[in-house]
Image (cartoon, rainbow over all chains, first blue to last red; front, side):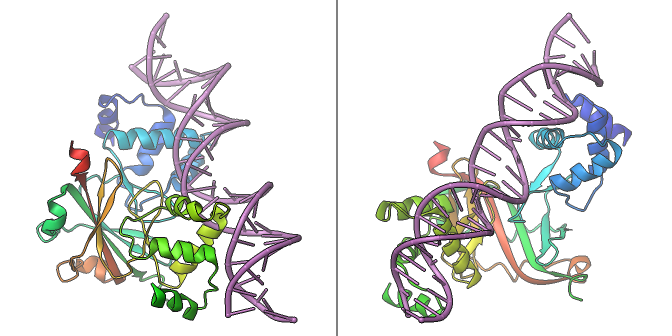
Amino acid sequence: MEDFISKFRGLGFKLTPQRIAILTFLDGNTGHPTAEEIFAAVRQEYPTVSFATVYNTLQALSDRGQLTEVTIDPERKHFDPNTDPHHHAMCSECEKIVDVFVDYSETLSLPDTVSGEFNVTGNHVEFYGVCGDCAE
Amino acid sequence: MEDFISKFRGLGFKLTPQRIAILTFLDGNTGHPTAEEIFAAVRQEYPTVSFATVYNTLQALSDRGQLTEVTIDPERKHFDPNTDPHHHAMCSECEKIVDVFVDYSETLSLPDTVSGEFNVTGNHVEFYGVCGDCAE
DNA sequence: GTCCATGCAAACGATTTGCAGAGTT
DNA sequence: AACTCTGCAAATCGTTTGCATGGAC
């Protein structure tokens, strides 16, 4: 978590206490929090933080490739501090998202009709279902 | 398109002219329109249609499984009248979405750690890249 | 000291809702 | 006639922005 902080300084971030709180909450977090959840968590420590700061920081992190926006929940964005390529499974009951660390790129070949008109740079697999907690 | 209309009547829809215009616009549409685009198209024919009617109808169609919401664009929902399972490729420049009709389900096996706690009912593959039009 | 970040509140875009009147069955 | 749908406007939700102050470098 030290190299973690110096890493962001090196990326041109000014490290404010609020940002450190956000980074600390995100570091190693596998829960795919929403902006609201991040806001709530940081607010425990800094009751005056604003949404603006949270959103600004999340966007700055995304812009610098330090954070992935997960577009799997139609209702809101989720954030994933793990920027290694991977996939997700989401529970349709509780909206919980879990990571799927499998590289499917070998098997995900596009049909010629699409590969001809599309220069594909990445892929993301979404699994839908019901998690153990919600299956009673 | 006739069976198409009687089909919706059979599903318990009251068929108003506005709804027929929406259904006609969607029928066979492979462009993955947004609610706004559907609204604009229907407005050509019915200048007084409201967003409420468009959204109500889209939701009614989704609820009855006649329309798929495509959650691939972080900015807004897209709608796909093709409810057969398939996948999508999206251009990161112009947000164009094209269909990918390949069944990957055989190759998309989940690791035990996830399959143990998740009862998966479906999957969706998203491809990202740049379409031919946007590649200059 | 410079410049960027913060916090507040107001703005925004997409979507939803309450309601009275109109239309479909 | 019953009941749903429509259109309007207002409300809501997630997210963004303008701006004056404060803080990191």
